[in-house]
Image (cartoon, rainbow, N blue to C red; front, top):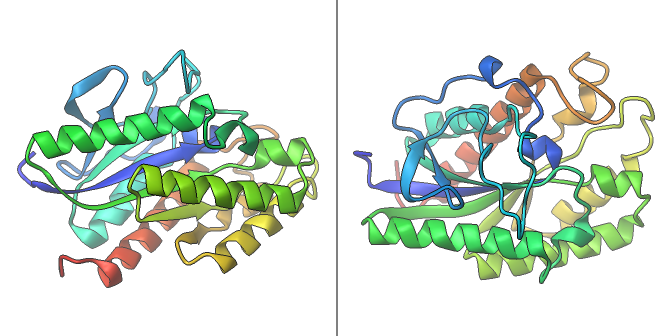
Length: 257
């Protein structure tokens, strides 16, 4: 990589962050603008980012879902964000399908795995002489809590606690949150969790909602099953979130563009 200034992004959450789309339909990342740090399978290098992002990053002691990551929103996010900032993104995958917020709380296997992957990435980049401009997370999670009928106040409180502790431990500046969509066949099932996410982001300056678009996809025929989306849907929400994040950093960057 010629560019020695990078942004580090942890893509974290459950299946719609992991990606259940079709990699061949996803956009190609612009050359030199996106890299994956593979903490599990290739911790000694950066790999050009491509879909399916994070496919091989399976940790038996943490996030483990072999064969499940098939195409995500990550490439679209990277293209939209870097088109605005001009700064390459180094992405780290740590998303687990079907995971409830209780499984991400501090001390859990998923939480520890996410912290370790992020710290490994930071150490690698520092040792290789990269300057990390910004480090942040993109979070999309909550459908399983809707299925479980998790109390919205409990969900909001536990998510807030986890995100703040994680950002401190992993040295992340901010969490950008993608609101969950609706269950295709029960449109009201996930509304309490969506509302909890609205309260969460309204009350915390460092937890920022960057897309509410997933909940429109059932009506737009962009769902592949009750919970997941077609690749064009992932591309739309990734592109929207990336554009919002890119504009955010243009106004908050310590390196004026």
